[in-house]
Length: 335
Image (cartoon, rainbow, N blue to C red; front, side):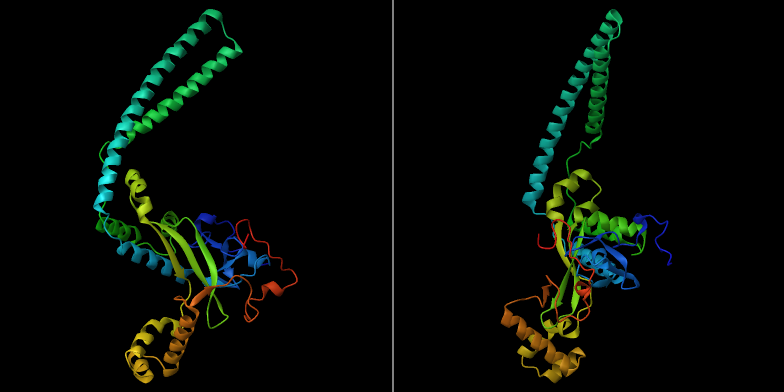
């Protein structure tokens, strides 16, 4: 029997993005060991023939691609609109007034609670104990503790007005957060899980072939970089981004299509374009051919979502196995 390499190691120590990727087809987590390769992630449902999505991806390369996409997004952040800054200032003032009012109400509630407890203890002394009286005292004491805790929380909140950081300050926070963090480290995993709650991986294929690749879709919450909780809550909607990252390296015709097409449109020959880009003439022809196909289909993305097994694909054949039963989790599989 083979020894489980994860035996005795907590899941929290899994190298990111392990334990953080969900299959967009069946809804199950991706796990390490895709097709026998230890650093590749694969849908756990496909392993047990409950999902047809048997495509894998290199976890180390994927982590670098997603980290680069996140850092590029941080670097491109614009400053907050002056009108929004003024609105946050006004809301901050209203929240501060509300906090003072709530503190006063809680202080009055505590005084009333103390008086009622004194009366109950006096009754206990005069009349003797009773189950009902004892329960009432316990209830009042529990209520007092809850009120004191809430009052302590409100008093501990900063009293200064909310000051929004500039784009440069947020970029600096991002740079400091990523600085000197190895992609395989536990600290890097904690940071990424804080910025990205969930990663949904979906299978895609280029429109001119059947080979399946994987594309990550996730929501990035850059507000989590800001240490002040009040500021974080105020700007969270404005610092939320939807990102799509290809977890594979595109072929030449896809990678160079956007360079080849304008150069050919400018009158350059295929040979001249190939020489300038360091490609073969055949590669430039394939890039131009792919672009013509995209134009005819009216699309701007050469990749399309794969929603079912493609009979032309000779690699993803798990759905043909006798044990195969497609069993997606609720919310997935077209449900």
